[in-house]
Image (tube, rainbow, N blue to C red; front, side, top):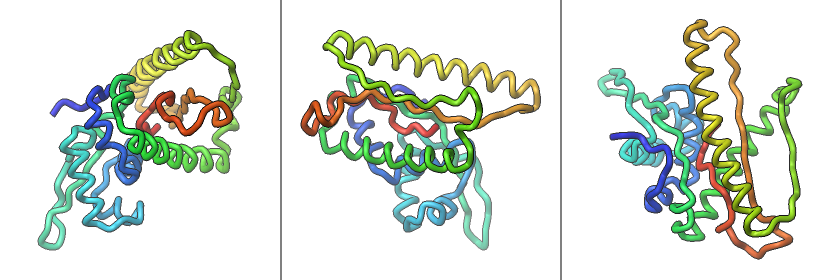
Amino acid sequence: MKPYRDITDPTVAKALAHPLRTRILAALEGRTASPSELAAELEAPLGVLSYHVRRLTALGFVKLVRRVPRRGAVEHYYTLQSRPRISNEAWASVPAVVKEATVSAALDQIGTYVGAAAAGGGFGAPEAHLTRNPVTLDEQGWLELSRELDALTDRIAVVEAESEARLKRGDHEGQREASMVLMLFEEASRVSVSTDGLRKAAVVPG
């Protein structure tokens, strides 16, 4: 199955809303692991976790990379196949309850990564970036900023691909693992409970 990148189908976007699926995708970033390893790491029942891994595999986000015989059974190992990104059109069609679940799972994940990075000196490099920009916008300005973030997301993918090519040629010397978090949202003081204006980066486990 061809892996998704930009998700245009609301039903697929809905399938990603389960918090455990978001955590599985993040846990498989840059590595392979078996359901039993993931279950222990994520503190989830093995049967439940295996079900969600199978669903993510069927959707094309996770792929089986090897089978290892163990004590009369076969252990399956998976890795991340693609980083999903939900399109504006698909997001607009997703029910509010699914949006809330998706955003909640993503923010929990982001908080965990950012907190661990901050505690470990991840913001110590002079090029590290951390800003918050409160802005007042009209409708046109809101749409323009959304398009700017879409373009930047595409540019990030290009920069990463170019970096991977250089690292491969240089035997991965100087490799750095980094994350970028992009958000555009309406402040709580200005709106009631509304997730329609939230720009998504569905797991993006970065």
